[in-house]
Length: 85
Image 1 (cartoon, helix red, strand yellow):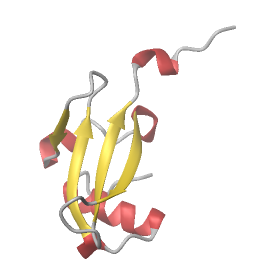
Image 2 (tube, rainbow, N blue to C red; image 1 turned 180 degrees about the vertical axis):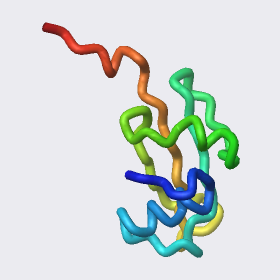
Image 3 (spheres, rainbow, N blue to C red; image 1 turned 60 degrees about the horizontal axis):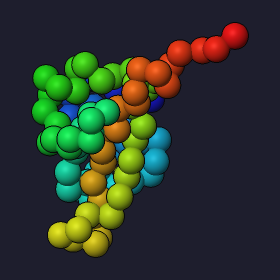
């Protein structure tokens, strides 16, 4: 997924285009690190996570409003990328 511009607005637009989610129904954008800690995303954090190979996109129903969803970028552990021959 290509995020242009590399910002929260760009991420929302990319999710809308790729997954067909309505932009006004996205109630939160989060990042979950490999240690399991989840934080709210901001533009500066997102610039470090623009490569689709570094995270999985998790879209879930929002707890506070069932008509909305949250988007979480879940980091993959570095061992996920190592190849064995």
